[in-house]
Every structure is written in structure tokens, then in C-alpha cells.
Image 1: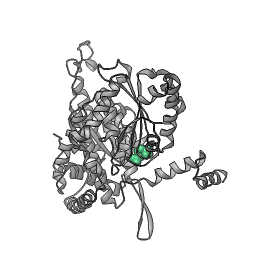
Image 2 (image 1 turned 90 degrees about the vertical axis):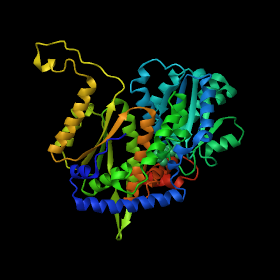
Image 3 (image 1 turned 60 degrees about the horizontal axis):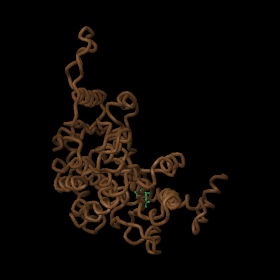
Image 4 (image 1 turned 180 degrees about the vertical axis):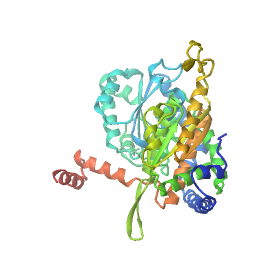
Amino acid sequence: DYGFCAAERLGAAAGLDDAALARLQAEFERAMTVVSAQKAAGKLGFMDLPFMGQDGLAPILAEAKRLGEFCENFVVLGIGGSALGATAVDMALGGCLRHAFARPAGAMRLFVADNSDPRMFAALLDNLDPRATAFNVVSKSGSTAETMSQYLAARQMLEQKLGREEALRRLVFTTDPQAGYLRKIIAAGDDIAVLSVPPNVGGRYSVLSAVGLLPLACAGHDVAALLEGAAQMAGRCQSPVLGENPALMLAALAVESFRRGRNIFVMMPYASDLLGLAQWFGQLWAESLGKAKALDGAEVHVGQTPVAAVGATDQHSQLQLYMEGPQDKLICFLTIDDYGRDLTIPALHPELTGLSYLGGQTMSRLIKAEATATAAALARQGRPSLSLRLPRIDANVIGQVFYLLELATVAAGAALGIDPLDQPGVELGKQLTYGLMGRQGFEDQAAQVRAMDAG
Ligand code: PA5
């Protein structure tokens, strides 16, 4: 139910003439062939996740049920792709103010500790009742320093307060089926529940695996509906024709805008609850497409810098820059047809015409008018934007959006001629951290950093 404009209208809005659109159509038809070949080679595991069925979901739901019997809080210990998806959905469906209010009946409160920040993490450990708290260590590699440090601290706290057996009952690992230290800990005899991340599903593409689904099921969200939405979007994204495939169209417009100097991709939902989704997309887009590649004997650098903004909030913060600053941005709005709730603005001051025009109108009308006005104002300044129109915010629609954006990302990667599945820059940072923290086998990395620091 997305309100995608016809290809010609989108093209016109982005300043693309017919020849440019025809060129993009040919290029992205090839990109779709590359994506299909990667899928056939088993590299794009995220495309299979929506179709995991009952067999895939059952162990996740069983684990959620087990923990739900004695826990009120569920803490994700993970970072990057092992964390952002759960936050995105919990914020979208539970609301950005969810932690300010009482826990919904039958659901756990979800906390995602997406950092090794001692101030934040100590506050979490200090304030949660260990008896009523489960800790889900989420690490595909099973070795990321931030996540492992949290695991060690949480486990020690649980063991000190509850004893070993009760501590292990409250831990769940989500990791590779075979590799990594979390598997070694279990193999050594610790009786800890474990769920697997398929080997061909990378961190930032893993929200619809156990990585995202266990926390979300524990928080009471409809994970089957998420998968169903993603499967529906998969069905809509089969065609190699831009106007018939929203993921391909989005990728084409983004890549073309990048080539025309638009180095920044602003994801701007008109809903406070979708900030987490914009941040999840930020990681997906940045880590997948920000790459160096060899071209004609030289190294070139590609990728748009993603920015997460929120309408109407950032109309009063970022928008001035988008209107008159450098011509280097593509703005992508997420608009909402039905907010699910509405408020009629009271007509309290009929004598004040500057206020009385609002009386009797709805708040949803106001925020939609702001989205429309912002797009129009940008167009007047010659600045392109595009809109993904969401019928509503629910699990099905969020599942659709995940799949759409993941497929758009790999299609954009194919067109840019880079591998959207690797992250060598992130891995380098991890290795240098291991070195600085004294991990055996990473002495060279430590020496490299110290040499640069001294320099
Ligand atoms: O998308 C990615 O691959 C990364 O952001 C990882 O998710 C992140 O570095 C955490 O890695 P891991 O799950 O191995 O601990």
C-alpha cells in the first residue's frame, strides 16, 4: 500500500529526464541480475528470513515464553547490527516514550545496551532487579569487545546476586551456529540457552532473524506479522522494471543522486516513533555502501552519508541547512497515512486569528501539512526529495520497510560495484581495539596504534 509515484513523476522530481531514466533502467536491470546471482549463491540470507515459517519461529517463541515466566526486563547486550533493529521496532511499535510508562501487561520491558559506555551500563545494572531480568548476548562473531565486556559484567553481577544456576537461566546467547566464543562457552558445559544467526545473514541484515525477533517477541511485539510484511514486500520487489519494484527505484534514485554530488541521504520520518528506524537504516546504508574500490588503477570512494532526522521536529533544526546549505543532500520522507491515534485541536481562543485557525482541526492534519509543505519548499529551492508513504505504523508495515530498505541497499551496492555485505573498516577498528586492550594475537595492531599515537 505504498504511494509510490509513477516513475516519470519521481524522475521529474529528481530532475531526471527520459534519457537518464532509460539509462538507470538498464543499469538497475543489471543490478537486479547481480542481486539474483548473489541470492542463488546463498549470500543474501536476509531474503530467506521472511519465509522461515513455524520451524524457524518456534524456538524463538519458545525461548520468549520460557523467559516470560519469570522475567520482567529483557536486556540486549549487542552493538551495531546486533542491536539497532530491535530498538527500531520496539520504538516504532511501543512508542518513543515507552520507557516513561508502565510495562505493558504480559510483555517484558526491552533495553538495548548498544554501547560499552560505563555510565550507561552501570546505570542499567544498578537499576534492574536481577531476579526479573534476562540478558541476551547478541554477537554473530561471538567476540566483539563491547558486547563481551557487557556479558562478563552482567554474568558476574547475576552470579554474585543469584548464584550460578539462576544466573545461567537468565542468559541467552544469539550467535553463529558454530563459531565464536559464545559457542565455546556452551561447549565447555555452561547450560545457557542459545539461538543461531544463519551464517549467511550479516549483522545489519539480521533484524528479522533471532537477533531481532527474540527481543521483540519478549517485548510483546507480533514477530509473525513482521515476517509476513517482509514476505509481502519481497513479492512486490521481483520485477527488474524500476516503476514496478520500489526497492530498485529507491536504489536507482539514491545512486543517481550520489553521482550528481548528493553525498548525504537524509531519512526523515514524520513520526517520532520512527527515529529508531531511521537510525537502523543509517547503519545499513553507511556500513554497506561506504566503501573504497579500485577503478582504472585509482582508488575511489563511494557511499552516501546517512542522516537520521525526524519531522516535524527537525524542520526547526536541520531544515534551514537542507533548504539553503550545500546542494549535497537527497531527502527521503517517510509519511504516515493513518497515525492510529489523533487529537482534535481545541478551539479555545476564537478572538486570536493567529491561533483560531487551528481549532477544530486534527493534529494528524497538521503534521501531514508540515510534510507536504516541507517537500514543496525543498522543490521550490530546486532540492530533490522522495517519499515512502506508509499506510500506518504496525508490525506488518515495519516488516515491509525492512525488506524494502535491505533490498535497496544490496541493489545500490551492485550498481556501485562494491560488496554491500562486508565491513572491512569496522573489522579494522575491532582489531585495533583488541590490540590496545591486550588481546593475545593482536600485538601488531597495538603497536600500529601506539606508533600513530606517538606520531
Ligand atoms: O553489521 C555488522 O556486521 C556490524 O555492525 C555488526 O553487527 C557489529 O559489529 C557487531 O558484530 P557482532 O554481532 O559480531 O558482535
